[in-house]
Amino acid sequence: MQQSYSIKKRALLLGSLISLSIFILMFFAAYQIAYHETEEILDQKLKNMAEWMADYAPALTSSQFDPTQQYQEEDVFVDVYLKQQIPQQQAKHPILSTVQTAASYYQYQNAGVEFIAYILPLQDRQIQVAQPLEVRRLVAFELAGTMLIPYLLLLPVVFLWLYWGIGRALRPMQNLQEEFSQRQYHDLTRLQQQDYPQELGAIVTEVNALFSRIEQAQQEQNEFITHAAHELRSPLTALNLQIKILEKEYQDSSTIASLVQGVKRLQHMVQQLLDLARQGETKTQASERVSIQQLLKDVVQDLYPLVNEKNIDLALIAPEQPMILELDKHSVLLVLRNLLDNAIKYTPACGTVEVTVQQNQQNTEVWIEDSGAGIDESEYDNIMQKFYRIHNTGVGSGLGLAIVAKSLQRMRAELHFCRSQRLNGLAVCVRFISFTNEESDTFCR
Image (cartoon, rainbow, N blue to C red; front, side, top):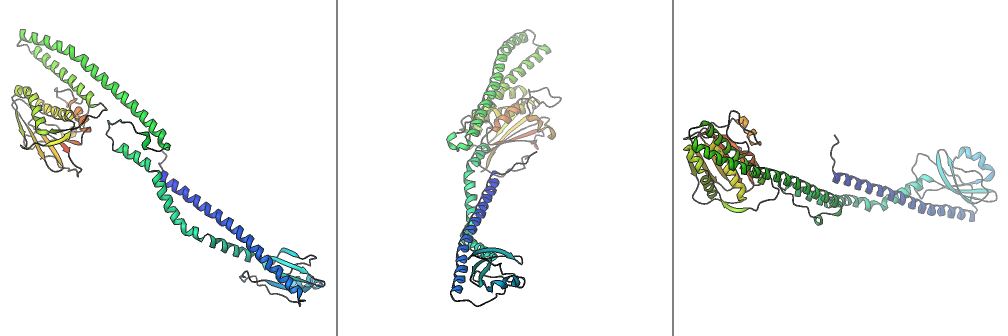
């Protein structure tokens, strides 16, 4: 699989290569200009010296050239020889050129060294003022380097500007990433085109189109579940009425009693399907200030008939001071109702269920403990799945905790399971996080 790469690093590398390429091109251009100017000056110098010597009837002279020595631009080699002696002297003195007939500049190579010389032929002798071409190349190289020293000094600053500019140019992409990371799973709000540059316009458009398709698909799914649940409600209500009539006629029938329980289970599952469909909606419900104690009292009041039927000792332990949180009230009610409903269902007759509320500066916790058989620790992850039911258990539809999980995703809340130390059943902790804090690994009390 191809590894991912950093656009910022690539852009910085490309910018650096471009800067270095510009520097090389500038150096080459500066070298050519400096060489051309140096050539003009030194050529004129050779010519002036040769003409000056010709005006004063120069005596014969021979220069000494050392190939191992480094010469400067002011060093020149002056030779004055009789024309008929030049062929014989060339073997002894390789710096000499051949006999020329016209005054001009000549380039030649002797002893592996390139020379340029201004040769001025007189009547019986020849004046030669020569200089190694390497001298001119070194002078041009030094001049070009001197001209580009300011650019070299500014190059680190250019790299810093480049790094800052690339980071600023890529900032919209980071903003887009932060926008996605901060969104809840159900938030399909359209991205605003004006918040991003034109280069990201196509991506923003496609993301918005994807949001629309996801929202439409989820809406169709939720509508299907809602319609199916509503279609089941009517026949179940009619069936329940018919069963009640039969129950009056056959009060001691175990078959009728089993049928009543089955219909109740179906009605409960239909209601849970509706709740699950509502939690799957992508539209975020408005938060409001709610009292945890008051919500628990409302839930206990709704479930009291079931508590009374099984003669369960239900205790609500909470501070008198109201604990106010800003949450989605409907989602909190679904969480508390399903968890307490499960605790009552799985607690045997004449058992005990305790609901405890406690709060600190960081969070609020609601503990629901029961005296039932409890759940093995290996099942804690499985029971959050839809339609999953503990083996050898014929109670429930397997949707309650799935609804709880959906609801908790809408809030800053956590759900944890452990065994109750006091009642020896299941202990469930719902933690509503009020502020950012370090999570604790200890939940069981």
